[in-house]
Image 1 (tube, rainbow, N blue to C red):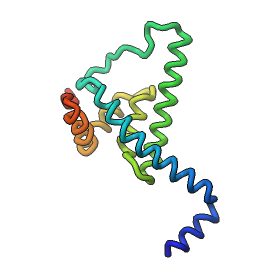
Image 2: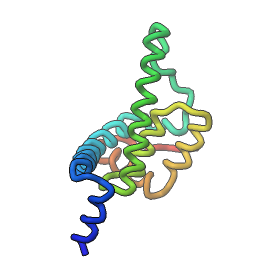
Image 3: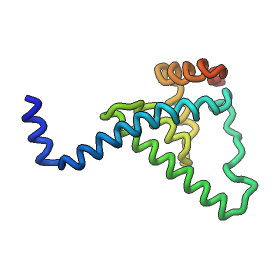
Image 4: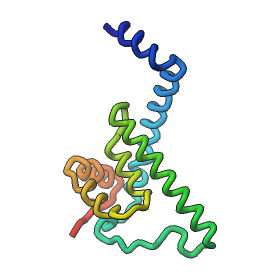
Length: 141
């Protein structure tokens, strides 16, 4: 049965592509295990309650600010796409997608963040990371 699946899969995807996908999956899995807790721990506990944050690179030259915003949004898109892939591959798909959304700027972002973060399983996982790091849990209104 497995041999038939491998033969079928090889007609659509080359062995090199499979190796690349497996390597990406392993790297993304390990990377998210490190990056996601590190970023979520550094957020203030009232992050989702107080959205009057200082804009990125506010006191810098407009060119630096623009490049910083582009880099931040590209990083968010990478995390979002990796999270979507991790829904089918090993990894923390929902948390990675949430992290990507935190980086991307778009209308309605704060409502979506709050809706996602308040999902019981996601909030429980994030607050467990924060508790292990000695940080208070996220608070909402």
